[in-house]
Length: 114
Length: 112
View 1 (cartoon, rainbow over the protein chains, first blue to last red):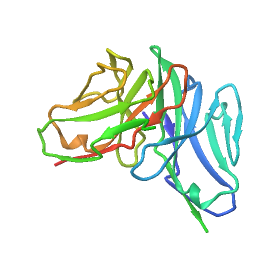
View 2: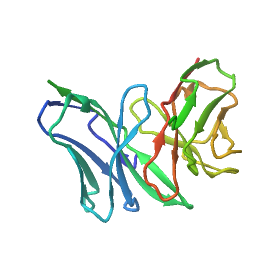
View 3: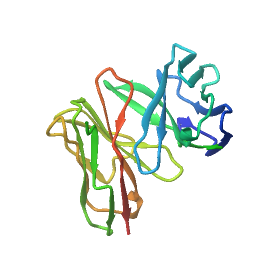
């Protein structure tokens, strides 16, 4: 049962344009959503997050949008830069038995072309 | 600042062998987690710990064991390695009240 899904395994965007990465979830009990960035042979690193009580959070070139009615979130990167090429992993969290549990999507490989 | 350190980075095991994946953190985080990631899949939680002496099962605990005798260390033990355990294993930590995890760089394990 894949509670967090990233349906696009890969995305290719031209440098300077907007990159939009999408994520869908099924469990309405998730209360926080996060995006991680992952390079090969490294662990994921935290990028940006959003609480379920908000619909937008912005940090520099990165903006995350949350649509609770559609159970959908997206990460926008504007403008895209070559250093943004990586795998982006969506995650959702909720507190279970006193501990927060993260559920991860499969990841989307973003390639920024010069 | 080391953060979360995992050893080894790579390992090849024969079926039936055992090994321990090491995870050490120097951030004094309470929570520690072990995840595995199979190709094309999201990370799946194996075991987690909310503090020294306390561990609990995640989604996919079968074939693994953990212990948490100190805040810093959270080793993952494979007793009888099977090909289905071929995966990349990540250790992660978080602090009470924090939503973000800090990950180690992973251990790539192949069972043949």
